[in-house]
Length: 440
Image 1 (tube, helix red, strand yellow):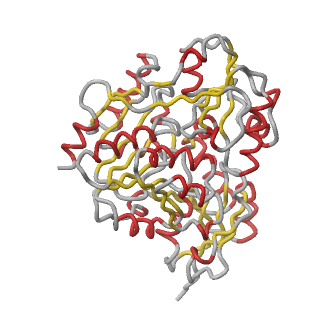
Image 2 (cartoon, rainbow, N blue to C red):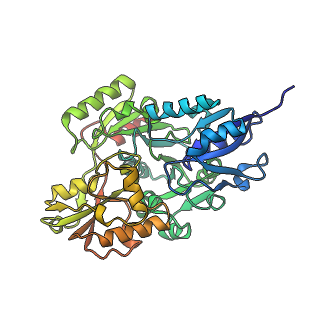
């Protein structure tokens, strides 16, 4: 009897790839995972998935290689199967990857939700999206506020962002700002965790979501899955919410696995209808109905608030936007640009003449970014380069449009002000109407 295991590589970006391994491959005698590959996130290749997480079948751990080495690795190592395991990429991109892999001699695989969703003992509301930057974060906060009215303990489980020492990030609990400092969180992590903590909501994240779920169920009456990018939920939802963005009409049917989220949804939130063109809102609505006629549609806005709009009027403004929304989310602008224009900024200052270090690479990789700065902060060097770029830029005011207060973690020498945005449903049904009915 032939007991040779299928030689496998998992393509990823330090999130879905590890989860797919933990759920499907770690104890599976049919497969031998030779490597992970890494892309999208800077400085995650060259690491190792450690033995403490890889299990008894992989006592030496599993290497993480740059994705550009994959074709050669397939041929050199006789790889038989490559598993695509990251998110927010076009359908065309996925199939180009498949073509390269098949031409190199391996099979190509996508794992679905049924193979990778953990089964909870508590009700779960998942908040996912069709693209990065649709407004999952404020939707998640809105859902948390609704569920807390039931006088129940609500815990958020966040999609992974394990960019540090994986062996120290197996299960992470964030109940205070001190926890964020203790875990040495990146800007990207802070953007997701701090607003929940400010609202009194505990957040769990990490690497091994089987272990995370066990810890969460000890203290939660309701679990909210807070998705990342446009990935599928890791925990099987009782109610699945998908957020769409009419600023990118048509993308809800063009990106992986965002279209899957749309087709799975019980509720679809069309966000940003106050700033999108009416025709685009209609097109998105028609696409939702075509893809998922059973879903309820909630129309919503994310109104911008600022403590003193007069500070923006007539100023030369440097806008700092959410990083992932502008990079793999492919948006040319975000809430900061909208706020600057709405409140009468004289000019959006172009930071490109002042870029420092790794930010030059970001703009080279994403040339369609407009006259603003993406708040890149996947590691200490990027944070330092972001701080230097902000301080070098000749401007009157820095408008911070990220969910985290950058002034707390860096020395911004220009006058600066933050904007905030929360989800606001327009008309009926509201999220509260639907969740009250679906969670009876």
